[in-house]
Image (tube, rainbow, N blue to C red; front, side, top):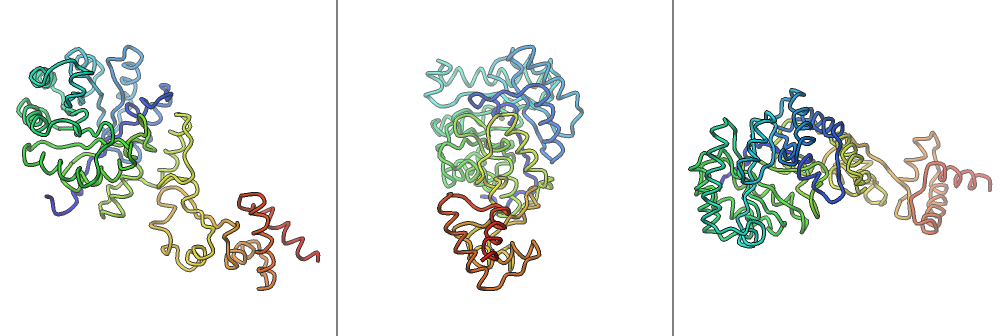
Length: 378
């Protein structure tokens, strides 16, 4: 097992491919171009931009993204079929991802083929792609439910056939971090090519599994903005990058201050609202109400914040509600140039708690001022 985190992790963003495969999500060309520019600007190393085999419109969009001249590598998703690779090559991409089902359930119901056919066809398609001068990543689809011996055999075959990278797909999100670490370690003993981890979030462990894979030696992490993706989504770009930075001590050099801006744009384009409690970019994750928490935050923000909100384009907010304390009451009024006595702050706090319970929400500044005016009028 690798004893330390690799400082050269490659982030592969698939918002424009797997993200758009979310039920009901459609990005138009202008939105795809804008998202690609933003991903490139913040530091994403590779962007998986679509599926050329879908037809002319998709191909035209892919060509337009390539025409932007981004620093990021541009790649496409393909089935294990030579016509798919031809379509990608005609778009002008230099990198292709070839998705190959490897679990018995997928072989039976998706391909209706046996293991030997899969190995031979994969070898043939890889060799064709290499003849076209392409960088090849082979995705082992549903790898977590494949037989271990076949998965290891598959990994060796793609390496011997000239693939540059193996993508390990936890296609239905059933791994835990311990299992993830174990399987990536086993793969590292069988092959020398790079490994990419692609996790789905069906059990809420996509980010944790991604980190476990990277810790075990995966060189690339597949992510999407906001964790957008089929069913429960994928590992979230912003979560993986910030966890690597603050938990693993591995700063990838991303412009993380633009995360909230990127998150908002993708959410709007996808018609998928960002939960206020969404890790890293949620609107309320730096909002503090509890009296004990606010007291600590006012003394030192690190008491209840793992990093500064400005790091991800957010701002700290002290909100007043049922669970507020007198320190918070005095703080918000001091910001408005009003120095309350202890008796005044206690009286306002009592009124705040009554109002918050009746309305089931926090109080706005205007509502606080009306309570203050009511207090001094007596």
